[in-house]
Image (tube, rainbow, N blue to C red; front, side, top):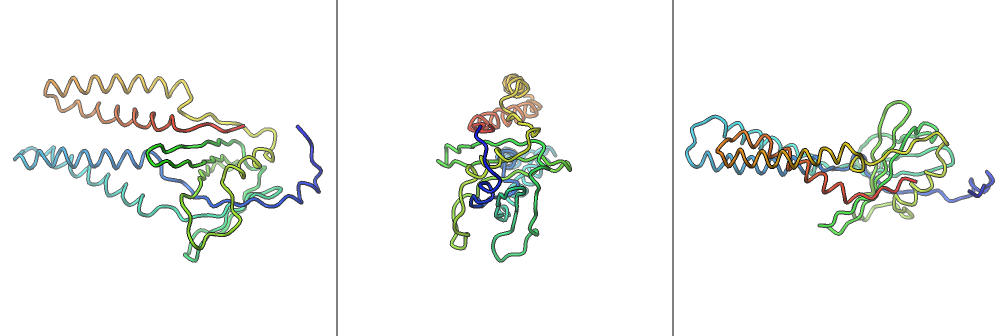
Length: 236
């Protein structure tokens, strides 16, 4: 790997990227989907005149999931301006709305990181993600901010360019983390989800509503695993 003089490194232009903290993940969307299914299924039972308390409880649970997921989507995340320097990362708020104060993160405090590209096929949208594990135990999940806005700072780049520079500047002991869906555990759970789907479907055919307790988790994990395949690990 070619070496660079400190003066040459210091002379490089600062890279800045618009990011969001804690971008919405598959769990939020899975909660929305499960909530809609629960509300619809139990609402039909109540409309049919069911006198059992289970449809009421199921509908309330579904409504809670829909409201919680909808709030998370509506709230979103305030954008942050991420800047990489010679020794630090700077996270600063963007816009006039009050938000968290600016934060400085020493590159030496990063003990592990993962960097990946997520392709949302149904929206034809690609989003870079960067997950940082810090020495104090905190985890920062950063991602490209979707779309552009009139008051966005000029001169910003995609998170891809900033993450590549970060990979060259982290200390030698910084660990690389695999994506979960690349592990043996994830593949074993996939087989378990297929078994849960089969067992849940069979129980429902036999008139046993307990099959839903197997069907929903199995379908949820299968869907999350499929979405996880749209992630390409870019960690050097």
